[in-house]
Length: 330
Image 1 (tube, helix red, strand yellow):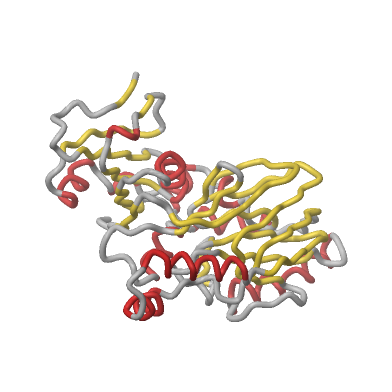
Image 2 (cartoon, rainbow, N blue to C red; image 1 turned 45 degrees about the vertical axis):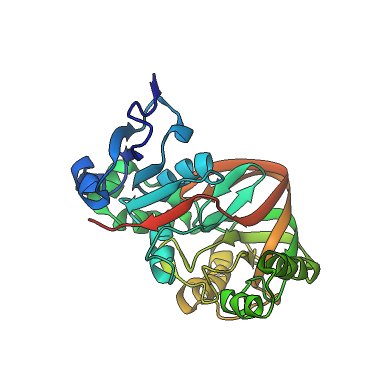
């Protein structure tokens, strides 16, 4: 079965997608979405579903689910001229928290996403300690217990990880092209497109290559001030067209002693927070792109969903063509 819009061409067409497995899906209904969005010709689909969706046939999408649901939809339309209204109905809703933190939530706007080869992530691509709780918590537990379902998984996930990895990334002290500076320069230069392109090229030319290689307890690429419910990335800026790399080296020992050793860097990252870039011990760098070399099969948490990777991966951050707005109605 194929889902497509069958109304008159001049009507705005909106597809409502509701993930029935999301942690708070019961609080988000088709009628609530219709009231929030107003005048559209609506079509609705409940997920998971085997129906084939013609994404290009719709102007607007209303996504009711968690971070993983949004990632699935953005994978299909990130490079299309569409609008996405995201109604966060998951348990943690880290992506929604990131957007609320920024100053660009008043109207639909392009957002920066990450790409790993041809797959996208909206806020996190991570492997190592504790990342498995994002995809191992059972749906029924998340619906019944909420955030507590993840907390109960923490103790089981408290293990030493030794992920062998080589990461070669492009870093730049100020990836963000400040919009106020651009406007000021445009006022002095009538060729605005040329000026903007010049600023982007200048940022590209100023990039420096950094290489990190070793065994890591946590590997995280993030475009968000928060992850797993912790608000720790103090350098987050929604207007920045790059992201951040966080690396926590594996402890020297395994077993109980290793667990004691790993407590302190994780406490520093997630409870104290990261306020400045560093390469000594814990790595925290603003990056533009990266090549990741994995000699062994490695499991990653991608916006709360499981993905397995091995070999060489190319990661980059880029602005979407589609526009996103968060609407919290629950």
